[in-house]
Length: 390
Image (cartoon, rainbow, N blue to C red; front, side, top):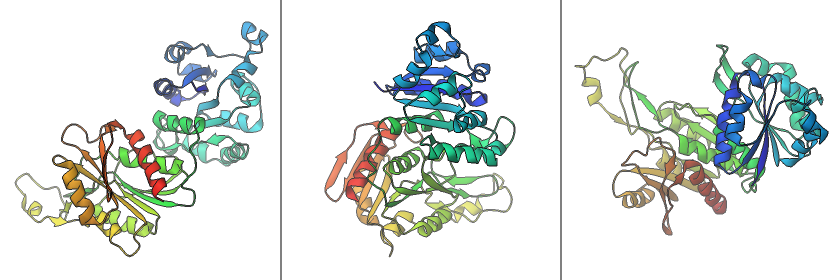
């Protein structure tokens, strides 16, 4: 079993460490926690001990542990040291080699790789001192994740939020079991999520897509070393590590952005693009005013445009969400769109927006059915197949 030493820094984001411990244990990763003095204001040692099923360490001045040089043992027993949340203060002390408490002493004494997930106010993250400290840590070999962007507990908005536990877990798994960088030098374009086609200032036409599968695929391709451009419809998912994200809303915006992102070695068109649009009304439509909805226009076929265009990538993969005759429709779609592969799944039940997929990979060689698995596992398997093809 792989093991991590999780250092929980101070800050409101410390509560997410509890979910991170749970996810790590579920993934078969052993966790030992070190809770800083600041972290103890937000979560308790008892909570982390119960979730990790291991003793939680809080002080350098424990007579029993330190009689056995406990901090040295802790720093060497794990396969990876993870700091989450890594506050601005903790990052500064790490960069300066300061050993002023148990956490920083462990970090200075460890001979294992270190991964830090920052969390702080947006202005603290953008401050020159923090940028300098992060640059120094990365130069020293520490993996420092990019924080998420969004609203913060202080009321401000911007980059500085702790990455979601699922994203931190993915980074941990990558650090513990490095994936061969098989796609270095390759550019892969991924389109994900729904599109929203406005009817009026209040309403829109859309498909029921969460974007989770497309984002997972983008992350899996980046983990293999690809340069990934992710064109994302209106979703609130965190950007996968190492991925360049461009947000769009409508199908026409997505089509233009996809075209601008070419050329690419591969295009993975996962997005659930709305097939129709209307000319949106300037004011909110009343219930009896359905006239604008009678004039539906077709949106551009983004998959066909990429697969049949002059700058066609070497590999074009489309997706098909079907409620009946899944494989039959997918086979026809591959031919009609001129795609190399179609990944099809049955969405007749409560599947759209869920956490797992059972898919069929349709290629010129035939149909390969994959057992139901998490979207992350489906993404990893597909990314490996893409690497084989490129």
